[in-house]
Length: 193
Image 1: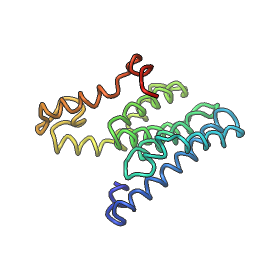
Image 2: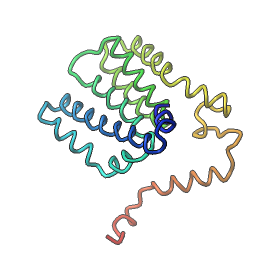
Image 3: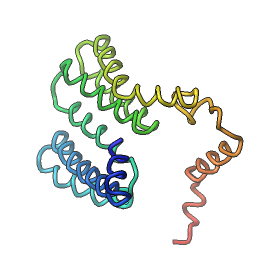
Image 4: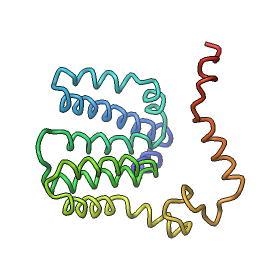
C-alpha cells in the first residue's frame, strides 16, 4: 500500500524513491543484525555487503516491492538473535513482522515460517508462543489473503489451486519462468565467460 501511495503522489519516481529508502533501511538493518550476531565490528561489513550486492542495487533503484518484504524479515531477525529468552511482546512483534512479509508477497510466507520456527525455539513456552505468533501473523497478513479469496476464490492466488481467470497459458508461462531458475552444472561450466 505504501508503494501505491508513493506512486499516486509522486508517480513512478516517487515509488522508486520510497523503494530506494527501504533498500537503504535494509542495509542499516543488516548492519544491526551483523552486530547482534558477531559484535559491533561486524556492523560496517554487514552494511557494506548488503548495499553493494548487485541485485540489491538493481532492485533497490526500481519501483518493486521486494524490500517491503525484506525489511520486516530483517527486523524480526534482529529481534530473534539477542542471547536471551524471548518474552510475549517480542513474540507478538516477530509474528506481526513475519505476517507483514507474507502479506507483501506470497514468498514472504516462507521467510515468515522460518522466523516463526526460530522464535518457537527461542521461547520457554512453545505452545503459547505458537498461538501468539499465529494470531499476530494472521492479523498482519490476513487482510491480503482475505482480499485474494474474495477477488479470486483462492487465498493464495495464483500460487496454488489456480483461480477463475487462470489459464493453461498462465501455467506454461510459470513453467518457463521456473525452468530459467533450474541449476544446470554443464551449462554453468560451459558458459562463454
